[in-house]
Each structure stands twice: as C-alpha cells, then as structure tokens.
Length: 74
Image (tube, rainbow, N blue to C red):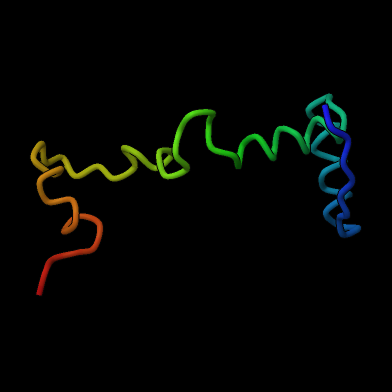
C-alpha cells in the first residue's frame, strides 16, 4: 500500500469523519472505498458502468441507439 496525503475543507473532513464513524471504519478506509467507487472495475472501460442504464422496452433498440441517446433525427 502506498501512503498519500490529501487536504479537505473543514466541513468535508467533519462529514467524512462522521460517516466513517457511523460505518465503524477509519477515515482512511472510508476514503479508499470512495476512491474505489469512482474508478472503473479492473479490465473494464469507464463507460461500461453505464451499460444497461437506458431501458426502452424495444428489443430492437440496439439498431437505433443513436436516436435513443441523441434523440430523433431532424
């Protein structure tokens, strides 16, 4: 493990400390978990966390993905 140092605003630190205490973990573990949550899973592209987010009910929606994402063509 690599040791690092971060700076937080007073209010941010208070909130982090409160949440860590409520979870029964250290502030360091709370920050590690927060960082892990924001990183893409190993071996996956960052955009994959959005896969399946849009649900149209149309089984052929993959054929018109641009219209689903960007709207109807003019």
